[in-house]
View 1 (tube, rainbow, N blue to C red):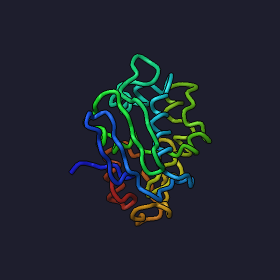
View 2: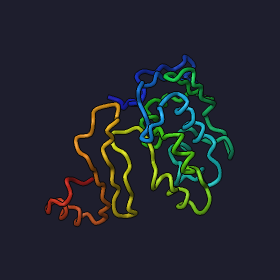
View 3: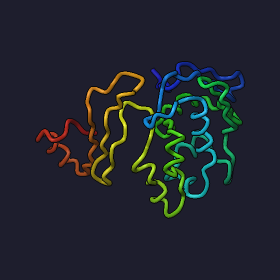
Length: 203
């Protein structure tokens, strides 16, 4: 079975395959308390489309660049044509050409909805510095703000990411209070940590 966007309850493609209308799940909030609604969806699409400079680098925006094939500025404008928030719970994304895998593409982590409020507050699109500076912006490393069952707590570079259960999650609540995702580069060390019981599993 194909993956489906969790923040939409239903969707419909136009006959020409150039637009998709989504009915959004009601009562969802971002981790900062901002309402998830059609305007927030359009803010995310417009953000991706309007990336400039280093934010168009393949190392940073690989999936958007490959699937939408361009940005507002640059070599090509791509296939994104616009976004219409027709009501708080209905949004239409318009394309310049058909994209049969559009709905499935929206399930990729690269297209996770982010809070427009937090992105603005923490200057999410600051493109000063090197590619690494942009990729690991203050927003990305200290304030990522989505809608999921866990909220971001902290990231210790090259060591671990700590997440906390989101008590306001719209769906099934998390079964654990804290999740720590550690970076263990050596395969043998991963097995040893598992055997010692200091980690619960590894990928």
